[in-house]
Structures are given as structure tokens and as C-alpha cells.
Amino acid sequence: MNPNLHGREAAIALAQQHFDSGRFAEVLARRVAIASCSQEPAAAPALHAYLADELQPALAALGFAVALHDNPVAGAGPLLVATRHEADGLPTVLSYAHGDVIRGQDASWTAGAGPWRLVQDGERLYGRGTADNKGQHSINLAALEAVLQARGAGSGGRLGFNLKLLVETGEETGSPGLAAFCAAQRQALAADVFMASDGPRVARGRPTLFMGSRGVANFTLTLQCREGAHHSGNWGGLLRNPGTVMASAVASLVDGHGVIRVPALRPPPIADSVREALAGLRFGGDPGDPVVDEGWGEPGLTPAERVIAWNTLEVLALEAGNPRAPVNAIPPRAVAHLHLRFVVGTEVGGLRHAVQQHLAAHGFSDIVVSEPEVMAATRLDPRDPWVDFVAASVQRSTGHAPVRLPNLGGSLPNEVFADILGLPTVWLPHSYAACNQHAPNEHLLAPVAREALGLMAGLWWDLGEGRTPGFRSTATG
Image (cartoon, rainbow, N blue to C red; front, side):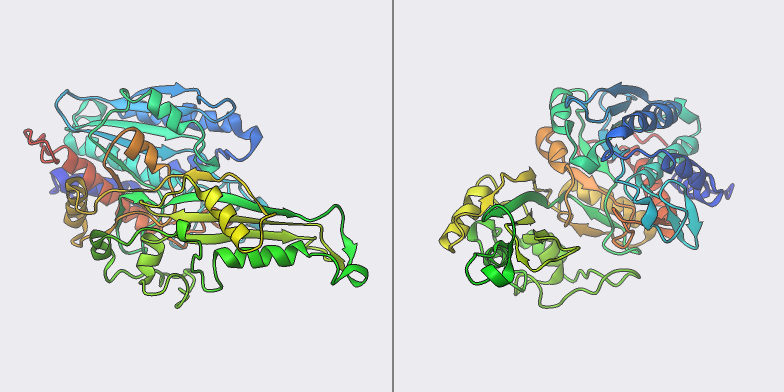
């Protein structure tokens, strides 16, 4: 590191040196090697080990008081709360991470060395959890360590703000128990603002902020016409085919261009502040990104508005008969799995009734609609003072203003922090859309990780300088 650098610049340099020295990869490799897959019933020891053996000592070394908690939902993974309290009257930040990952899909990897070993190939760091979410929270913790080192006294030094970290181990299974835990621990998790990292940037080279997420409602349509299949030559034309009926029913909900046809599932008009935030924003274009389909989705909207500010009804799976080994028979049953990605202002409490009513009106009254599993939508005004603060910090570190998304197109348990804990929420992601998240060959980009270490060191430093929204205390250094 350049000995002439001091203060904020020194912290950023130390954070990026952490990457250049290979120490970041060493730490991340150790974390990737823990197969903390919450989707596997046998993974409970690994989930506990990730918190107790990996994160707890690392956080204690940074001056945090750390406590592990059982999940209020029986059988769900544990949670960790770490607190570094410097003084009353300082701003308090709540951050979040998840230590669980999805299934490894070991046999399907074609790059790297499989899910549980970190391998760098060019600018890609392969391994399960590198992007979602072990790599991202490892960046944030390493940047915090750099700030403490730059301030001069290790874990005994001062950040200039109070920091709390909540780590769960069930995000990949819908965050069971997280809402109940936060409601019960509201006082222990009290803060002035929520800041965390998950999800992708809009493009690899464009630092991004998002202030909430679209909600998601998963539901299933089931049509059972009879018991057993029947020969299509002997009975074709006489028996109602549930596959044909289901395809028509789905088409009554969302047309062949992706336009939602159920009025109750459509969102309210897009707010002017949201349109302004999305103006000129493009999606796609990074290597590995699919080509955006022009003409797909709600007409009259830009691609950015369709994915960030509008609702989409997606067909996730359709099944009738045996798709892998079809036979010449009329199947007895058809199933369709769908979900609605929805924005703030969409009334989803009556989704099941609305879909059932719509299907009945179109002649499909015998299709059964399941009660949806819902993750709520959230959104913070892109002009909120905390958003301005984080955006200014990122711009100071890079020389460029970050992209401000009112919300992520995907879904996160942000309603726990925004609604239950009542916090303004700002996410600063360190991945990109083509990272193969939830798929084989998941990877973190080395240049993005290195830049993110600097961004986060700058942000942690600025939080301690006494100029955060609502606070005007004396700077710490």
C-alpha cells in the first residue's frame, strides 16, 4: 500500500490490497467449502458450522459481540446476531447476510472444480455461494476490517457508528422464521438504517443501489379430470384433455406476449419518481446475458419499467402426462406452477380468489388454485436522504454516480427490515446478472469484487464521519 495514503484513501487501498494479496480468495475458499445448503435436510450441521465456526470468530476479531440463536421455526436453520456498539448517540446501521446456499448440482458444473471448491479462471471465481451470498458478505466484512485498520487500532478502534449484523441460514428456502425472529428481537435489532448486499448490479461495470424488491406470489393450478390415462385413439374426441384445458386456462391469465389478462393482478400506474429513476436505463449487454426480447410484456413500457416497475405473471412449469417418455394416451391430470412478481401497491391478499374467479368466468371452474406463498413487495423513495448519502459515497469512490433502482426485479426478504423493523433500506449488490446464481458454474467476477471492496470501505468510512442523515456529530478521523 502507498504509505502516502491516509484516512479514507488508505482504507480503500487496504481493502483492495486484501484482494490483490490473495487473502480474499483464501477466506472465500474456506467459506465456499462449507456445504451449507439449506435445501438439503442433512445440512443442519453445515448451517450451524458456517455461523459458529466460520463467521463467529471472524466477527469477534472485529470487535463484535456475537450470539447464535435457534430458529423460531422448528427444523429451520439458526441465526446469528453480531453487535458492535461504540456509543449512544451515534448512527446505528443494521446489515444482513445469508450463509446458506442452494443445492450444489455437482454433476452439472462445466467450469471450475464443482460447487464446493473455489477456483479462479481468468476473471471468474467459481464456487457455490461466490455470488449468492458468501462472496458478497465476505466483501463487506473485509472492507470493514480495512476501515478499522486505517483508523489505527484494530478491533479496539472506532468506526464512528454502531453496527449490527443479522445472518440467517434459510434464505434459499424462503427465510423461514426470519420475520418472527425479527419481530421478537425488534429492540435488539433497532437501527437508523438498513444496508446490505445481495442480488446483481444492472451491469457488471455499473455500481447499483436498490431500495426494495418486487414481491413474489407462487401458486399452482391443478386439473384432475379422471383416474388413469386412456388410449388417445380409442378415446380421443370423447374425453376432455386436461393438458389442452390447462394450456388454454394459462393463456386466459397471461397472453402469448406476456401481458397479464387478470385485472386484479395488474399493478397501479407507475409513479413519476420511479419513471424518473429508470429513465435511460438499459438491461442486458454483459457477456453471458440473454438478449432482451423486444415486444415482450406490457406494451408502452421501457424494458427497465417492465422488469422493475411492473408486474409479471410467469409460468414456471407445466406438466401433463410424462414429458420424458410420452405415450399415446390422454393424461388424467395437468398441473401448472406460476408466480406473480409484483410491485408495491398490488393487492395480493385476494390473489387466489381473483384467479379462481377469472378462470371460472372463462369456463375453467374445475381448475383448483392453491393458496399462494407470498413474499411482500417493498420500495424506498429513490430520493430518500439515506439513498443520497450512499450514492454520494459510491460516487466519491468511483467518480461516477451509481444506478438507483427503486426496487430489485427479483425478491428478497426486505419486508422484514422495511415493514417489521421500520427501516429505510438500501442494498448495494456486488454481483452481476450473468453470474449463474442458482445454477451450475456460479461465479463472482474478480474486477467487480475488487471494486466492491473499495466501495464498501469508502461507505463504512463515510458512515463514521459524522455527516449521516439526522446526525451531525464530530468526525472520528
